[in-house]
Length: 139
Image 1 (cartoon, rainbow, N blue to C red):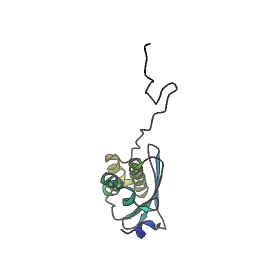
Image 2 (image 1 turned 135 degrees about the horizontal axis):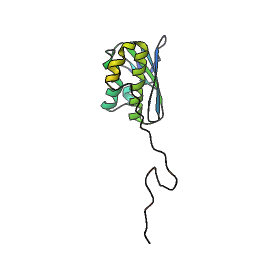
Image 3 (image 1 turned 120 degrees about the vertical axis):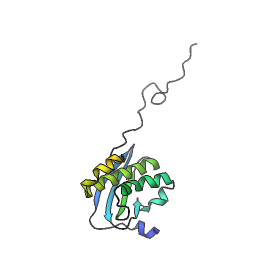
């Protein structure tokens, strides 16, 4: 996959899915294609340098046996790199279900349809962070 292949935005009909994790939101489009994955207009290998993140992004396509049949175009905002990878995987999974409802059981079994609800806890008044209290002094 060259830089030019992933940078060009596919056109035509697509299947859409929104993925979320923590504060990251991914808008994912699946186009019929050869397996190119672009995130924010760049090849995903340049953004996701860790193999675990790369595997996480590819996992829904591998579970659905659609690894070389779709081009993925994703736009992600918020969060960090790990949240981006999980949000894109969630979005790809949802888009695959729009494409074929029969893929729901294997994607559900792989845990790809459940949104990870863990978010940062809010800061409470009188505390330094969410739960860290100021140091207690007896005298």
